[in-house]
Image (cartoon, rainbow, N blue to C red):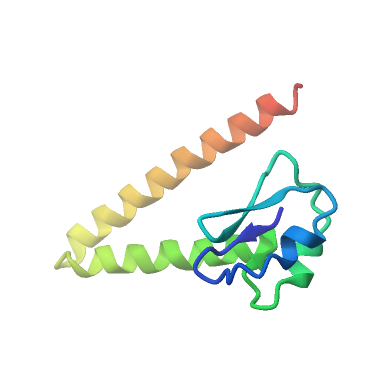
Length: 112
């Protein structure tokens, strides 16, 4: 599914015009994709002149980088190996819990 980086969007409306499913609209001067209407054709990705529309893979990579940067910033506030180790363990537990929630949700959705 395509994603729009709102900071990068220049409101040219090329993606809005190109979308065959009318899944993209403008809100507050930025393009917005309606996930429920999107047919995942990728035409918006190709037509964006500033590369503000990302593919899923690119969005995942961007989010991973953002998470790592955020975690490193938090780690700098803690001194010594023990607090950092506890913090890392806590972060991993949180991510594992989120993973279980997502896996459970996917499992239930597949029953529909």
